[in-house]
Every structure is written in structure tokens, then in C-alpha cells.
Length: 388
Image (cartoon, rainbow, N blue to C red; front, side):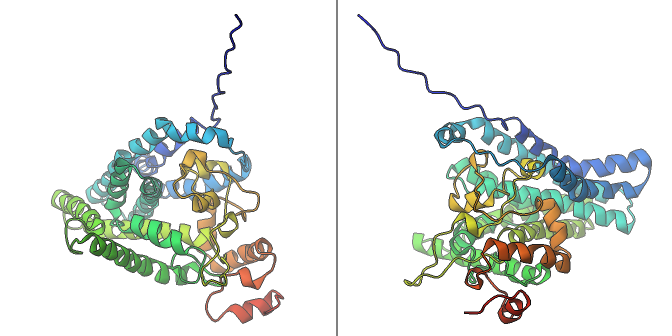
């Protein structure tokens, strides 16, 4: 009798499996500056981590180029079921908390000149902003543990409303004029921040209030996830003040403000000027890869859990970072986020680089551009676009 053996399904080998541990090194930027300062007895050393982040990383991105390969779709269930990738994100939560507490202790324990204190604010804010990105990855998942870890990760800088605002607000209204977290053509980041930050907080509170009312719970009560996160923030800050003195509160406020602005910077970059079309039924077209700016630059993607593959993230929000894909039809950024943030902070440079790319991405069609209010006609004349 002849027996037939079924072929064993091929196991996919992820070529990037081990590089995600690189993310665990990002919080060490907070400790690098103090160690160099103590070694060299020079407070100027506290600025070196920022140079590494915003100069060295973009240079490495340029040198190593882009990596556009995608895992085969047949391998995605295997990738998503592999707990290894989740354990990396879990391990990062206490590392980030430890880095934040260390920064507060260092500032409170050393007599720093003003420029050195500012460097610690920016270093801590940048790393805590990286923590918001971790909260973003965890907060999109359905597993209860990951949702709780997202809340804990967002707590040190008081950004507990982010998961609610991002998941139920931004993802619903992305790339439309109604979305406070989608930047518009002709809008500088310094104008955008005054629309995005308060708008996101207000939208999150409205969404959470409605959820609680639908469930029959009091808005000002223990089931309010925003208040729960803020309670963790208050407890942490109170303990730090009792330990280190009230002066540390100024540092906590400043570092948290810069951290939260890093999220604003990401929002500004991710959808600049892109617009979903309004259909005849009054609804916007489904969000497609063409409605998000992408970057496949290697080093910054390793740091940010593929956040820069943003097109796939918006098309498939629950997809885990290790399985996110590149799309050829998604508009591409010239650099990763660390480089793009610096560019955004200088609006004339940003407009000079990004406006032509935006026009190319939308085929020079004004109907597909999300214009800043009052700038449509002027921008169309400037770039020779035909008004409808």
C-alpha cells in the first residue's frame, strides 16, 4: 500500500526579527547625556543625544536607504501569532518608566546651567514621545493586557486621552477637513499645534463621555479611561515631588509638553495636505494607502516599530508592526521622522520640500488636496493649479 505524506507548510523566516530589539536602546538616550557630562565634566555633552537623534539617525537613514520588502500574506497569521514581537513591546514599558524617573532624579540632583536643563527637557521629551509611539502600537490591539500597558505607557506625560482620540477620532476622520490631527497644505506646524492639541483632547473627552453614557456609567467616575490615566500621572508626579522637591514639577511639565508635541509632529508629517474625496452619499471615501505619507527608511523604522509604514497602518489599524507593508502607490517622505520633524520646525523649508511632493502625489489635482482655510486660491495660483 502506498502512503502519501502531505507537504509541511513552509515556515516564514522574518529577516528583521532581531532588529526590533534596537528599540529597547532608544530610552538610553536619556542616560547617555548625563554619563558623558560626568565623564567630561562638561554640561554641553547633554546635547549629544539630540544630535544623534536628529542628525546621526537621518544620516544613517540616508546611508542605509529604504527597505521596501513585504512579508508574504500567507505568513502574516504566523507573524501576528508570534508572541516574541509582543514581548519586545512589553519589555519596553518598564524601561521607559525607568528612563523618565532617572531624568527627573538627574535634573533635581544636579545644578545645571539653563542650556543643560533645556537639553534634558528635550532629551526626555523625545524619548517619552517615543513612548507615546509604543502606546500607539499597544493601544490599537484588542488584548486587554496590551490596552492596559498602553494606558501605563502614556501616563508619565499625562497623555492618557491619546488612545481614545487616535483610535476612535483620528482613524475615523483622517485626511478630511474635520480631522484636527490631519495637517493641511499651507499650514505650518506652529499653527497646526494650536488646532491639534486642544482639538484632540476635546474630541477624546467627547468620545469617552458618549461611550460611558451609552453604557449607563457616570462620566466623572471610575470607568472613565481618561481620568484613570490621569490618576496614574498624578500619583507618579506626586511621588516624584515628594522625593525630589517641588522644583522637579517644572521639569516634568516642560518635558511632558515637548513629549506630547512629538506626537503632534508625527501627526503633522503623516497626512500633510492629503484628502479623501467626499462621495455623493455625503461620506468620505475609504482611507487608502494614498492618504498617508510613508517612509521605508531603515533605522528610523527600527526605532519606531514601523510607524512610518503609515499607509498600511491606516488601511489595517489592528495589523501588528512586524507585518506592516510598503505600498507603491503611497506617497513617500524623503527621510524618516527624526529628519522630517526638524524640517517641519522650519516652515519655509518644509513647504519648499513637501509642497511639490504633495502635488506629485495627488497628480496636481486640487480636489485631492486638504488646503488650509483661506489659502486654496493663493496656493493654486502659486503652483499653477486649475481651480474647479
